[in-house]
Image (cartoon, rainbow, N blue to C red; front, side, top):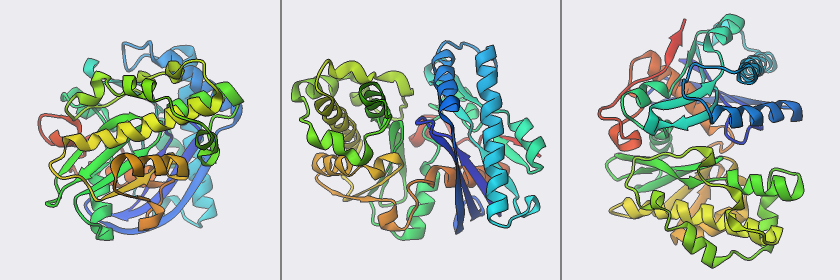
Length: 363
């Protein structure tokens, strides 16, 4: 089945598009990918929506600002798909389904509350292609964390690539999450802690550019070991998984009023060490950690992760995957699983009491 997956992550830089041939259990072929960037004005609106979304107590409520942001998300995703089809010579009839994650503005599973803005019905009407959306809510409603959703796709990728077990697959977006795959294919997955969000926020505040390109700033700094020791005794890291985090669970200003380089170095080390701490819950540590997401482009972060784990660290590209588009591919895969009523989440990935499917299918 040919499916398109869409992803707009916590970095809020744009919409990733990916085509996948899959039956929802295996991956037959990877198709082309695409991207629709947000303008600075659009990113500003989404940042404001993130702040306003934090105040929601009803997942269906929309303030005027949130409604404006939701309209933007729907329109931007539609434009991304339309451009993708045009550039790749595809018709709408070539696509069986679109997996639409939307933009997370609030994730509070302990309150059974997760909010992704984006109108799946409106997207279906504009594209003329069936859409699966609202992929987290069923898990949260059933008592799960609603995240991470991607582990079942990670296992399918690892099977296809024949990677060694036990294996760790890390996605470093705004929040970092890991999928551990044991020798028998069993899954354990959870959010490990901050990903790029703190470093991005630090760089935006200090330099006006919301990224430490190539990890160059962090590489010039010196991490504050006292602050790191204090951060890593946070109770979240000792809490047994499954568990998940909101993007704003930690703040970039925790490093204090230090030089830009030293703050970046401390935050990068915090991300790497909190990821490595995830292996504390395993019987056998992975020999290989595969890193995807924006963090795969940061050699300083990769080096720090290698030091923290004492194991081999590779990027998705090193093993034949696409770090940039893996999550978009995952939502194509999950959309097909949803259509077939297959589980998206498991007790060992989100803490849901029993395996559960999810998503709303708009035919």
